[in-house]
Image (cartoon, rainbow, N blue to C red):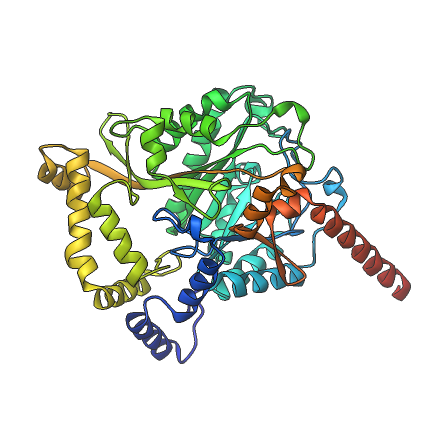
Length: 475
């Protein structure tokens, strides 16, 4: 069996060779080279212990023109005013973008299938795009408002089964306008949208159960002065449903595209104070959470905290941050990972591949598994259950206490005015979120705020018109 279940007369020996290669080289040389290239872009002042770019991640890529049209009319939107009149790119052009992103991101690169609402595109074409991304070694995440899948859950299952989709992000917030369900169509508070978030959680649990396949889920939220005070409530909901939502990303609105002038702006300190209100950790306050933040490039662009959410019966979930500042044992574990196994991931693996890769990792870095990891796990148990760490570990092993990976991120896009500043230029140089246009990668802020999206859309329209004229001439 191949990665997507295809068969051939030589499938067994090829598979065995592939598994042996994972044992021999759990992190490909190409992945290490991609990380090294990203690290060279990081200025010395940002090469801090909490810097992730170039140490374990190469950043993320995104498509453009895959489907400019959207059936929502949101108050916070970075698309152009005329996006709904722009035809989608031909499939082969989207695949060429993926190829360019693969060259930049290396194996297991993260790519967002986005632009407008990609789920509105012909399902056969979306499936082809997903399959190509997986075939060339990218990990695609479908960005969506999710309404399409609530109306047709079979479409989500089709993308999972036929396209190999394993990651999806649902955007849900009060800036959105266009949901079909009247209960949420004019929601004015995030509290009114909590039942909708619960519907998405139930949908994911159901399609996982019905397909028997993996579906990793994130959620994004546009943050304005209107809903800032509810950020903590959203975080608490996501923690309580961490079996579904592995990450929630907050996006303070930037004055670009067709964003309404009235939605306002949010700075990092304001946002993280509200995030801290929602996360329940020991010594829970904004300063403590700030100490555990990771960077992805420039500190003014992206920050995130990662770790695990722990649930014990009906008790409120608790968040365990993992970072160089969370404990000395965590710092040593992370240093060992970055030094010996940078970029290692199991996200694209089938079970047998994950087992082979894990064996290779253990052979390459035995001290990490024999010493650093056990010490870190013991430290986590002691932090979560002071005085009773062994009992806590037994409860985790028996399923009484549930542990799920969980992360919270915040990404601040720039306005056109910010691009021209010295800080703006430094942020562009360190951008970890890039778009492929004509084989070249450009920072998303540059695409959004420097007119590149408008120029690209205009070219799509011209080329589509030329194709239509040629077809009419032939007819």
